[in-house]
Each structure stands twice: as C-alpha cells, then as structure tokens.
Length: 341
Image (cartoon, rainbow, N blue to C red; front, side, top):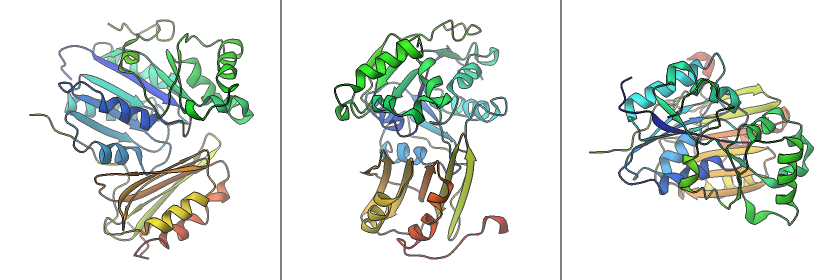
C-alpha cells in the first residue's frame, strides 16, 4: 500500500466503561481541519456499537474515516482480523493520523506487537499509547486482579485518569501509588480529566523503544464501512459470546423498527450489567445509550442505519430477560432466526 510517509498512529486503550469512545470523539472535534483521520474500533461483542456512535456524532465532520472490528480482541488469530481491517482502512482513507481503539477486554500489548511488526515498519509511525483509567477502580479487587486491566496500564506512555470530576480525595493518590509501587508502570505522565478531554499534544509523544524493539518509529468526505453483523431485513438478530470471564449479548433490529424512548430509558436504567451500549431509532429521534458504573447516559445522534444493543456482564444469567424486555419497547415483534439464514 503506497504511502508518502509513515502515518502517526496512536492506540487508545482502557477497561470497560472508562470512556474511550468519548475521548476519541473529543479528539475528532479538535482535529486540524486540513487533516484526514482514520479510526479503527474494536469491540468485545459481535454486534458493534461504537462505530454507529462515532458515525452518528460525526456525520458532518470532514476527513473522518471509521472501520469496526467486532467480535473480541482483534489481535487474536495472529492479528489477521486486525491486519485486514487496518489495511482496508489505510487504503481507503489515506489518513494523516490513525487512532486505534482496542476493546476494553482486549490485549493492547499484542495489538502493539502487530503494529510494530516488519509489515508495518514503513507504514506506521507509532506515537503514544494512551490508557484511560477510572481511578476509583483501584479500590476494587476485581480490577486489580484482572490481567488485562493491569496490562493496559503497563503499556501506557500517557495515562489519563478519566471521570476525575467524580473522584474522592484519595482516589488519584491511590492510582499513583498503585502505578509506581505495584505495577512499576513505565509512564511518568498521569493526567486527570473529565469527559474524555484529551489534549492533541499528548498524541505526539513517541512510543517507548523498550516496549517495541522491532519498530523504528520515525474534495474530503465522511466514510463508514460495513459492520460484521448486518441489519436484518426483518425482525431482529441476537448474537452472544463468552471470553475473558465476561459474557456479551447483542441484538441488531430491523431498520424500520421504532422504539419507545421512555420505556427504553426505564429498562436500561434498571438493567444489571457491567457495560451497556446501544443506538436506537426512537419516537424521540436517534438516541445513543451508554451505561457504566450503574449510570445511564443518553446522547442525541444525527442518524443511524438501524437500532442495536450490546450488553456485557460477568453474570451470564443477568442478561437472559433483556431480549423480551427490549422487544416490548418496540413497534414490532418479528423474530429473525440466525440459523435459518
């Protein structure tokens, strides 16, 4: 894939619900107008929500290109899903900068190894790996004992303590203590921010050589790409999976379905899951729903080709009732059978 110079590339990682997509949206709003940026988004679930959210926010943005890799860590299977998606994105976008968002349950070290391989030596210019973390989680043993959570912190060049407006006085000192005394993290840069407010200057720190010894870093339109799970022609499609000690269940609904926004809000507010993300066509317009730490937020979007929902829980049975409950919020009841198509 011929390019004039290596593309400045950043991996933006962090655990479930920490605000990675919000941070990327913030960066996109502040990108130089003359630059073309590409975003490769990886999600744990099979359905794919973040691409729809980014697309719905940025439909008027010039020079933004998005591709999604749903279905678990994109570095698995020798990085093949990631390489195929990345090569297609670069060829189509010819970007001035590339942002890569691995799933919150993915392995950023392996992603970085793929990006630093011989194949991408002359294509990508690896800059800072930015890890978002919620400092309040340092008090929760479920996070401290999770290998992916710790790996995300260890590989960081810049650590962003997101949701800082919700911290108690001891939260940030506890994070700093954990980073330096327990993890011996290599990053000396920790920035508390609110609502994913990353600064553009943080992107251009170069990746540490000790982490990637094989890498020698040295008229526009909005484009989106097809998702792995397409919109069903009628009814809905449900897809589930299990990995890394978590269960995901996702649904994609017929593009003609319209949902009751008030009933959806009530349902999702009461749902018990570590992470809930969705984009719905409702009687009040297109709404993106995002739930983390038992707090549900809603954002109005300009558009969405369909409605879709993804829920992630450490308790498999916690999601069993959701399918019937979500359908009850819609104007249709037709079931699309995946095995029959």
